Image 1 (cartoon, helix red, strand yellow):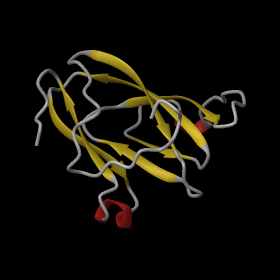
Image 2: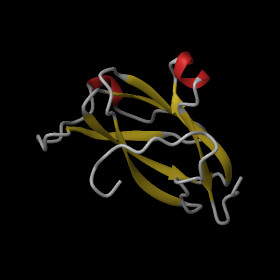
Image 3: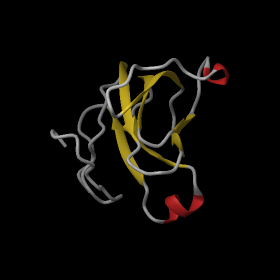
Image 4: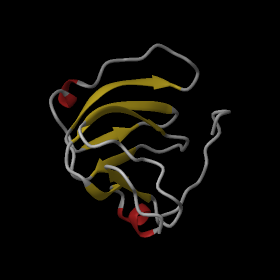
Length: 120
């Protein structure tokens, strides 16, 4: 939220990520947990920009193995992971944590590329 507090959203909550077709966006993934999470974004290849601790420490560059284009990234605990992606395939997709128990418990969200995202 605007105060920097986490907001839990489930699968059925309204779509909050709605990039325009052809846009390049930098997404910030906040990990408020004590565990690392492998985050996967369907239908896009992205680049890891940097990571930054919540306590306003300096951003650090991606790990050496994270150069180039990816479809998954590790979000470390207590950090913001920034990725940059080109959204060039219109449609409804999903982004989620690749830990199976999290997928099974709705730790995934739909996102929509293009105008007029579905409301249900």
